Amino acid sequence: MNEFAVKNWEEVIVSGTDGGPRVAHAHATFGYSGVVEGESVLDYLLYYAGEGYDGAGTKAPGFERFEGSVDGREGSFVIKHDCGFDEKGFASTFEVVKGSGTGELAGITGTGTTSGALGDPTMSYTLDYSL
Image (tube, rainbow, N blue to C red):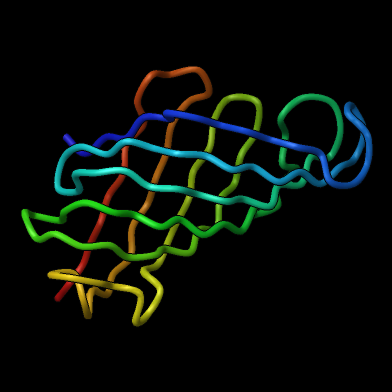
């Protein structure tokens, strides 16, 4: 099973007020297992429509840099996320950033998804890639 877990999540409001419409920056680290083994660092720009954690149907952009292995090949790469979220959880689609692969992952291309419920210890991902 392809899973990842939040190791750290730091979020700061950059515009607006808590409880009202606002923009926030989130900086997180994740641990991955499955076809992808390793750690990543992610930065999201989030929009909250009001109270709670509802993204009001918007997509939050983010970049995530992964370091580790994919099917045993060592290296790193960057993915660009478009993430929707609400009080229950999130769902993201992503694409590997062209030219971002290093080491044995140089030249990697691909797309994938992430999803999960807020508060769950692990979330799931898919990755369709080619090298």
